[in-house]
Length: 387
Figure 1 (cartoon, rainbow, N blue to C red):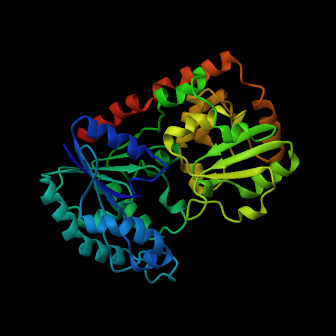
Figure 2 (cartoon, one colour):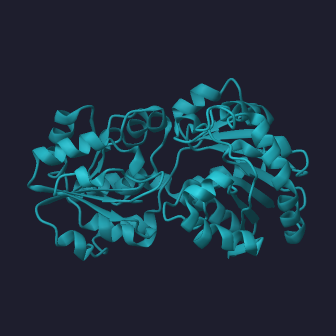
Figure 3 (cartoon, rainbow, N blue to C red):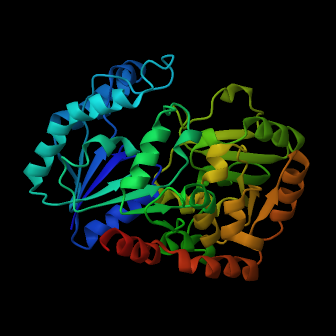
C-alpha cells in the first residue's frame, strides 16, 4: 500500500506524535509513505527565516528526501499566506485552493518519482481537499488528532475544509470522545481511537533500569516535571504553585521558543527550570529523576479536545501523575491519576502524588497501559486505513 500523509509538521520534530508511531510501523510492514510537510509561504519565511534557511530550504531543494526505510518527506513553497492574522484577506478557502493548485504539480511529480499508484491519502491538516481528485486516490482517511480551531494561527475558514474532508473521507479517525461527539453527524464514517505508549521504552523507568538524568538529580528538593508542548500549559498556574512551594523544583522539557514554546520565561520563580527539547530516547532518564509528573494544562478548546500522549507514556513508566481535570485524562487514566481544578487542588494533589511511589502502585499503572502499547494501537489503525 502506498500512503500520502498530508499536511504535517516537520518529520524530524523532537515532539513525536501519533502519526510518527503509525507511519514508522506502516513502513516496517512494507508500506510506502510520502510524508508531506506544510509548505512554506512568504509570511512563514519572514517570521522564521533562519529556520527556513537551515531546515526547510534543504528539503525543498532535495525534492523528495528519504527519511527512513519506506518513508520519504517533502515540502515546498506556496505563494500566499493562509492565515487569520491579515484581517481576513488571507483567511479564505479560495486562498488555500489557489495554493494547492500551485503545489499540486510538485506533489504529482513526487508520486511519479516514487511510482505511487492509487495511494491512500492520510489527511491531517485538511488543506488537500481541493486536489483530492487529481491525486487519483484509492481511499481517504482523515486522522483528527486535535481540534484545529483551538490552535493559534489556524485560519477560521479551516472549519469549512474540515467539514469538506469529513464528508469526503471514507473514514475519519478521532482521538478523543469530544471530537467524536462533535463530528459524528458530519462524517461519512467515524471511529474513536485514542493514542498510546511505548511500553518497551518507558517500562525501563518502572523496572528501575533507566538511570536518572544527572541534571535532574543535581536539582534540590522534590522534583516535579513535565515534557511536551509548553504552549498548552497554564503559565500563571505554574508560577503561583512554584511560588507557594519554593522548596520544590519544577522542570519543564519542551520547545523554548516558537509556537509551541512558553513565553516570558524570565517571569518564572527561581525554582522553575526549562531544559529545552530532549530526544525521545532520553525521556526515560528524565522521568526516572522525578518524584511526580505534572500536567498543568490551561483549560481551552485545544486542551479539552485533545488526548495527551504523555499520560499514556508516564503511566507506563509507573510515575504518579497530577493533571488539570480534563475529560480525556479521566477517560484514559481513571483513578490511576490525580486531578485538579485550581491552585489549591494542584498543590494538594502534588503533595499527595509524591507519596504514591510504592512498587504496587507502579505495577498497577504499567499493567493498565499495556493494552495501549503502540503495537496494539497500530493494529486497529492499520485495519481502518486498509478497509
